Image 1: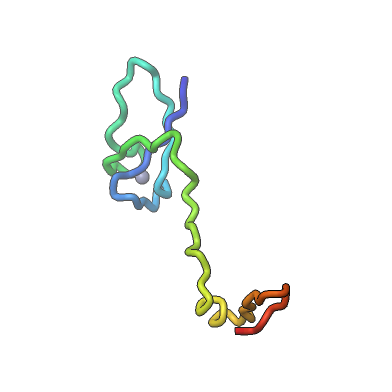
Image 2 (image 1 turned 30 degrees about the horizontal axis):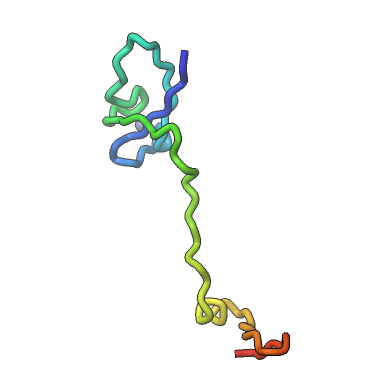
Length: 82
Ligand SMILES: [Zn+2]
């Protein structure tokens, strides 16, 4: 019996923490509400990419704000502090 993940369509749930796993029999129609909280639910995309927040590419100003020295490569293989 496949285990299918569902999530509340609201995206938030304190009871099921935004995700509930349900066993689905092939002849069953998909559940439409969370058995824990009663919210409307929808199947989670099975091949969804991990929900990682991709950091923006660091910019020079961000790096400086974070306390990093920003080096600029000069001709000849030397670096200069910007
Ligand atoms: Zn829930």
